[in-house]
Each structure stands twice: as structure tokens, then as C-alpha cells.
Image (cartoon, helix red, strand yellow):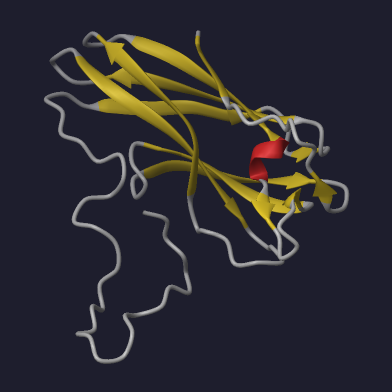
Length: 169
């Protein structure tokens, strides 16, 4: 469920629900072990419209049992001509780690995936600042940094780059 900072309450005549969202955040899950994230790095903080955001993160099983962990990559457009979600999932990777084992995940997110549909029904990418976040769930964010996309507003071609490549190294 996308979270918008300006979400509307229910219409008149219906009970008002002042809470917003669900009982559990997206990506929530139970595990019998624990995981630590470190060495999170963004390759370039200033990108051109044709570039890609390169993010690497090391994940270590710090608990006593083997387990699975889903590493999630989120983005927020800091200033946009339209209201945007405060957190959009753009990529993820599921890892199986033995106790003490560590692996590194690399995300390659094309700038094209920072797009939205404008008022003219065109898919566009606007230049500006974007928060790049890595988390265990949509509310358990362990890393956040801002990148800048240079250039103006770019209308995407029909065959825009729409896959965040994920590699376990």
C-alpha cells in the first residue's frame, strides 16, 4: 500500500479512520535469527538522465541459526511537480545465510525507474534530489542518502529501462 503524505480521510458519512496503513509494514516477517547490514555504499551521488544508481550493501547473519533475509531498495522523490509516495519499492533480493555468513548485494537502478506519469499522461523523469533507502521492511530503513539527477524533465521513450538489476557477489 503506497503511503502518501497527503492522504485523504474517508468521505463524509462514513466512520473516520485516523490510522493509515496496515497492521504490519510491507516486507515485515519473522525470523529465528538476526541480520546486520553494513558497508552500504552508493557509487555516484550525481547522475545524468541516462545513468544508473549503483548501491551495494553487505548483509551478515549475526544470529545462531540459518535464515532468509529480504533486502529492499526504496526511493523517494524529494521535490516533484506532482505529489509522490514517500517510499517506493524499486528492487529487492532474498538471501539465505548460514550463521556468521556474509554476502554483498549490488543493485543497479536505472534513472528511468525514478519516473512518474505527469498531467499530460506522459511517463517522465524530473531532475532533482531523490532519497535512496535500503531496508529490512518499508518501516525498518537501515540506510538513507540523497542522490541528484541532473538535466531537465525527460519524457521516456516507449521502451524505457524498467528493471532494477540485482546481483549477489
